[in-house]
Image (cartoon, rainbow, N blue to C red; front, side, top):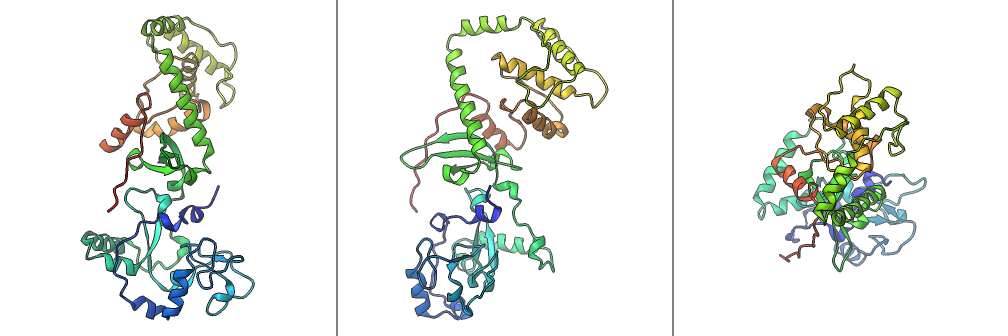
Length: 355
């Protein structure tokens, strides 16, 4: 899997840009750039080419932007041994802000020079307030870049895929990131999440199951008869093979059979034993056994403090089941109801209006 720095190095043609006045040459004077060098730079904005001479091969790539240089094209030239991580002169001498753009995930955060913010204040008055608030929140006297983590790495990792859409262009997925709530889901192109094949396969598997269930439940009478037939009690003599988390202990297997027998008799029960003996695993095994018999969905009510542990145990013992945590803000719950509670809907890509 690529590093956080690699995932943040987004293609330059996909960066949001302000419509700014480029007449201010204060930055050029600060860096000692001439009009000739600026002309060379404009003519050399090719993929995998030096921003100074325009040639390719043996390039140093800046870790915070998309600029590339030959070591000999730098002033002064950079000699061997070359560093493993390197920043171009633009990023070294100019203050930049790492920006999360509205409507895009943390994967698409980009570094923006301070000059761009100053010129955008007139068109976006609220931007000045955001910058001032950011400066107030920054710790005083913290100059160590090694101790500063602007983005939690898990915010760029795929947790769940909720939907898929495709038109004439590339396929896109509606993605929930690790550690973020459902109201922070965004559409991502397939190429941007290509390293998360396991999550893509899980999404495709669930979609296939949904289509199968939709066909099975087309006849309501057959569905009711099938459900009543499945209530016949079947005892497990050993730990079921559909539980990849490991072997159940004998007392856990007994608890599983007890739950299945009570369910077949439509009797309410309580698992009451000492803490740490795996009541949660027995409950998950029971739900997984019903899932194997096409009896679903299920509603689990649990305290907020146990939700993360419950989610981890489901991922360990029943990873084939789709677990939806209905918790969060009103906006997050609205996304869950739209994409997770019911059979998936077809989603078409909205047409973007040019501004």
